[in-house]
Length: 151
Image 1: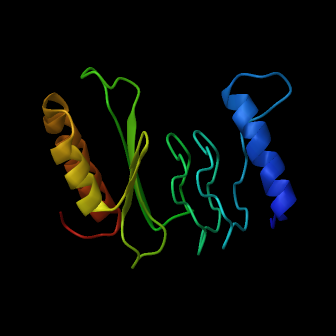
Image 2: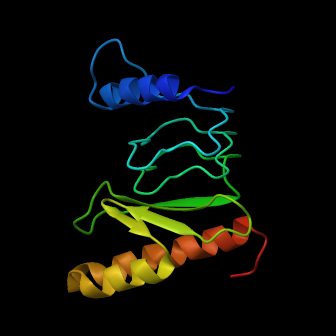
């Protein structure tokens, strides 16, 4: 399914309203959609269905993918939920669009590569460092497993 820019904007707007529990709106179903080269920067795709979507060349800079179904849409992905340490409900999402692309990490307002996330953790609140580091390590291992690489 190929979407025009206006159609995609409409889906994203209705999805945002669905996330706010507004009536008459629904979860974004972008499964099997051709989103190649789409500008999804800063889009809230939390809990959206992107299964099987083509994201080749799509701009996902700052997009929220927390709880999104990325199966078949990216080469590898993992989501780690933060529970019981002060960030209850947060999720670290790690994904690689193409098999040779770098892994991107997202959590809350953070978006970047592994080095950026390590720096963010190091410069953040000391009491969050152990759990954030553990989440990062778990995500790296899960991505490695999905790629068939031993961690």
